[in-house]
Length: 228
Length: 174
Ligand SMILES: Nc1ncnc2c1ncn2[C@@H]1O[C@H](COP(=O)(O)OP(=O)(O)O)[C@@H](O)[C@H]1O
Ligand SMILES: [Mg+2]
Image 1 (cartoon, each protein chain N blue to C red):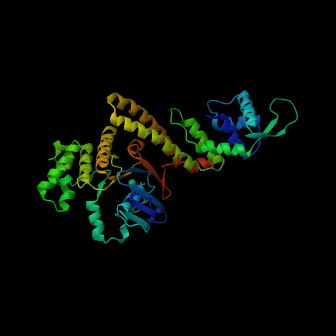
Image 2: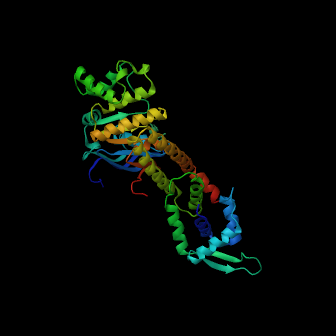
Image 3: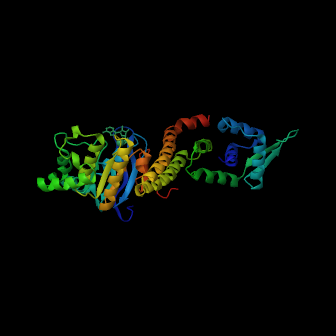
């Protein structure tokens, strides 16, 4: 059953890499503008769930539905286009391209979407400003701090104004002050643009930026809203 | 911590005398604070009055602790409610939470869910504090951060306990 008004929904996801399943009948749902924390111990299947939701990996069974359409029924090209245009990604270690400057990194999704360099970088710079890292626009990732690099990664995720942001331990490599600031900026931007945020984290102070949490355990995702 | 609920839950495995209850309590939960006999008897007479226990038999012989108590259906329901209800997040919660987890395992209830519900309750307060931090001045932020770090410490303990539930279950049901 798909909850009314949800943007991205998963039902009955199964995924195994070996004998023990990483996901064993996991359900999930998020609507526009919502920030949902995905919590659970290490190895519980949080990243696997995120990757299934984003269409990065294919579940063995179960359905992921985005905006009313099952991902599995989309041709590969369409799914890739979706990932580039409507989804944004932030991972634990920024994963910036080392050869590009920070502004070029932030502009990359727009360039891949076919935008002219000047326009793409103009928009990227706006996001770098918003993320408080416009001053390092000309530096390469190797020349900036972890906190700065992660802000560039967030800018890159937001530059296409995606409808869903997938963040997998986005503050995992940051100290608390930087982590908090990144969470603030990320969730503020998401709320302004009505983007949904799937926030994988094992840290409670990071999860406190969410609207609700689901807990992944034994391959299942338990929605804790209304559990108390 | 609710001594009444704890004694009640200890009765779920079978009727016990007052002195036996005290011994079971001290063994599991009274490491730094063993119960006084007086506490046991005043608690048991309150539970008796409220219909949560009944007298299951009276031993012959001297001494004040001759009554044997058994939990009633209402008592079992009461324990269930107590275990299902999350604790208000506040400092030094651990002993209560620890007690609840052990009792849930001993009485065959779902300790994992108990911890999930408690996490949820903590997170609810943490969200409020985080929101206040966003809109407040630096002083607000520092005060909220202090509370947030304490709540986080509770949750780290909770996660560690959740990860060890299997081992703990083996120990308490041994
Ligand atoms: N590419 C992979 N190949 C083999 N096993 C994997 C792979 N990715 C994840 N796993 C396994 O699946 C389980 C869930 O992993 P993951 O989703 O990364 O958990 P989490 O993000 O909660 O730490 C773990 O047991 C992990 O070892
Ligand atoms: Mg992971």
